[in-house]
Image 1 (cartoon, rainbow, N blue to C red):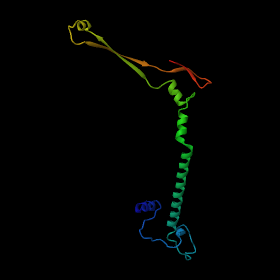
Image 2 (image 1 turned 90 degrees about the horizontal axis):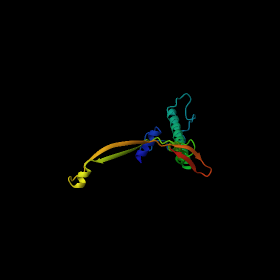
Image 3 (image 1 turned 45 degrees about the horizontal axis):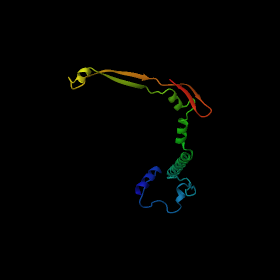
Image 4 (image 1 turned 45 degrees about the vertical axis):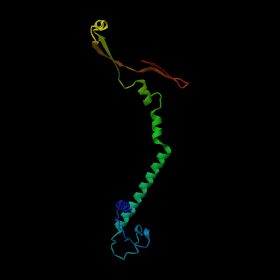
Length: 162
């Protein structure tokens, strides 16, 4: 609890004391600027600390209200869900549609072929192990795209894959 008071004291620019050292009268007197307590011609000594205390309290309260308003806005509007639904919309010009129409990923197919060089000897029993020779690898790049995309009235899509 003492640490909590220290943190709040630093935020409000006040020091923490175990014993109450403040005035025992009106607790709101820190923000009151009573000119009748001053004698004529006297210089106030603590008016700057009272003003900074009032300003910091107001600033802290305003920040709290802003945080509460943002929290309620997030709770009722669900911005993550709205952005997600906007991004995954599959329609002409949409982000997901363009990724589907022309995928940005290169697709490669690698084919490894092997020739058996001692088939006759192995089948006749002269050799116990097969000898193979690798041919390739043959690498094919698949270019994938969808042409003539049409959105039909019955909520279907017609396209020609190429």
